[in-house]
Image 1 (cartoon, rainbow, N blue to C red):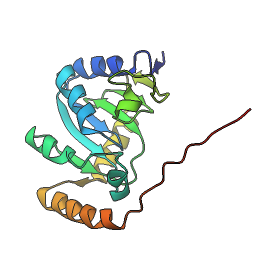
Image 2 (image 1 turned 120 degrees about the vertical axis):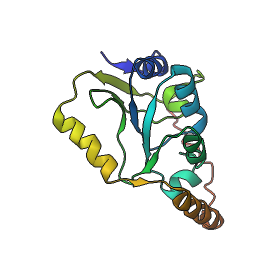
Image 3 (image 1 turned 120 degrees about the horizontal axis):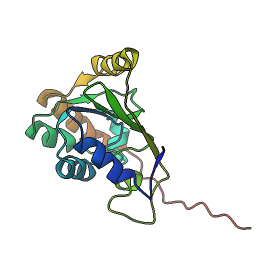
Image 4 (image 1 turned 90 degrees about the vertical axis):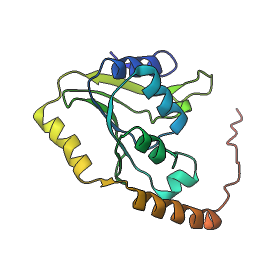
Length: 176
């Protein structure tokens, strides 16, 4: 069964997390406020989080630099992998919630609005050994964020903000 945005995506994900043992999150773009909602309202035990975290992602507001201090305060390791594009919540390497949604208000439609993205998800209840190895490979190829790396990213972000072009707000209009 497909899990669809606009109907049951956020609640299905929250339920999956709440019924899980240890979750590894692999999502390229994460907004801190929505991640907090998922963690705190599902009661999930998060084992690790892996994000893409390119400087432009943070400058554009696709992901939040504040993830690191929040996760560090909870004892959850944060990994960075610039190749990451998949979106998966892996439970104890045995099952997974896999979909197209990042962790953001528009993707998960939380809080609910009429301006959400169309997203799909599925729950896979029987990950194979090859599946498990794939997720382990991603984590192995990722960089663990430490205070030193976080401070470097924060410093680079401050410099990049000065050079980052302001994008004009251009609307695409179709007339029929």
